[in-house]
Length: 78
Image (cartoon, rainbow, N blue to C red; front, side, top):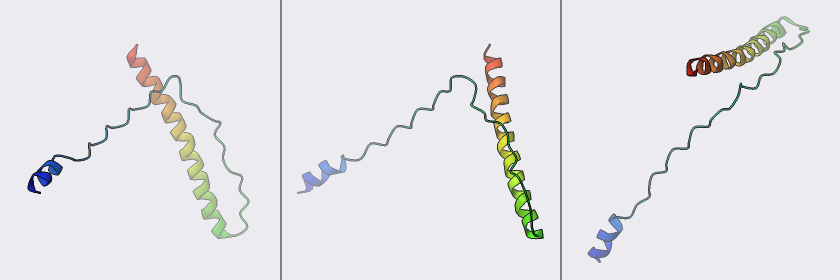
């Protein structure tokens, strides 16, 4: 019985290998930046509209940053 337990001690799960990083070929895909239309009816709606507008600007800025980073990275590779 003790021999059986010693043999089991050597069994274990093998850690998984990390997933390979995806490779990007070409410039990142961008879509036109759009700000949502607003039509606030109450003062509380102004805050909601401001949050939506700021989110839309942040999404647009993230696209610009991605394209800029791509250009910087590939310009250095030349």
